[in-house]
Image (cartoon, rainbow, N blue to C red; front, side, top):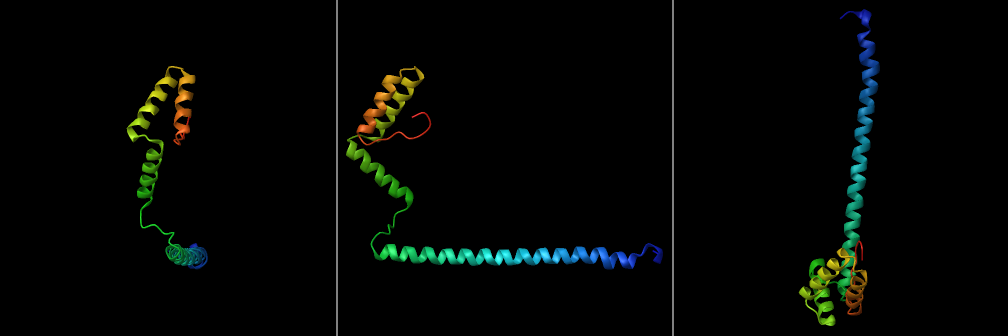
Length: 125
């Protein structure tokens, strides 16, 4: 290459600016990552403190969410004097009634379950 192409000026000017921009961007990403890590550590520390306070007050359960939900479901079924199969059967009867446009019967099944403390939640209640 000859000097007529101004190769040295091109490499010094345009590429140097691109490399500065790339380095600047990488530095910003590093700082953002460090800030995220700091935030996560902060949140983890707060979670630990909250759990400690709840445990001290006797409000921290050792059960998982699914275990707690199972216990609540069992209590609701016992209180309603129903089994899970009974509820599922009533839901199926209600679904059939809705398909057959027997809306009064469908509403009655929903109200009967509601009176026993079982609420049907979802699309097309």
